[in-house]
Amino acid sequence: MSPEWLAAASSLATLFVIGLTAYAALRQISHLRSGNQVAALLPLTEKYQTPEIQDSLDYVIGKLNSDLRDPEVRAGLLARPSSGRARQANKIFNFYESVGALVCARALDLQLVLRYFTLPSEMWEIGSDFIALTRSTRGDEVFENFEALVAMQLAYEKHHGTSLYPRGLPRMKVPPNVA
Image 1 (tube, helix red, strand yellow):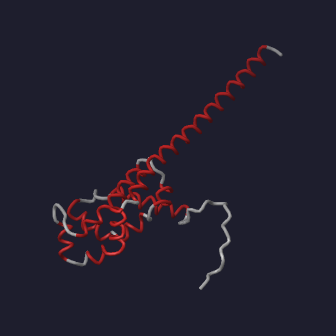
Image 2: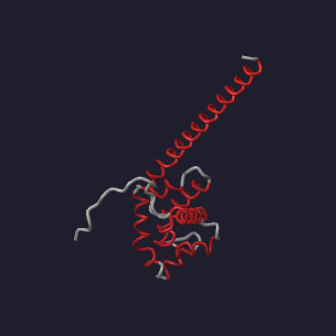
Image 3: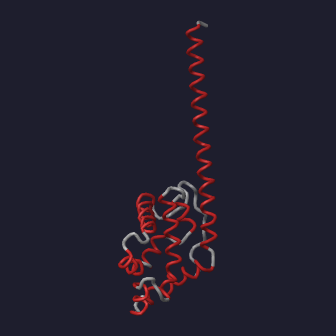
């Protein structure tokens, strides 16, 4: 084998080794990102399960909008600092604000949020009057990460649909409706 062929073969072998190393490095980065997301998700799931957040969630779903019809409750929200029973909604909305900040910063994947927590768009819709009242005295920056989270969810659903079930995976058989 001539020296030129030997040099070409060694160059190709070097190129192959460099390509393989780059591939391994990218895989390692992917594993690190997954580990970081788990590290971010675990405290959030723990916080979401606390009685404080669950009570706030129950309040928002069950009573917030009826309470907002009361002029005294609305006045309490407009006061600085805010007061009254509707303030309890802040806990769950601040939770979604924090989650939105992590998703916006790409520290947490949107799909994980959609799998683990009540859909952000549902919470936004239920709380829209509360958010509007809060923003009327505190500015549009209030709950903007929550708003961005909802916008990302809606964009995701427009592109991928509302199901998070893995594509290509066969569905399990379930019996017909039993009355």
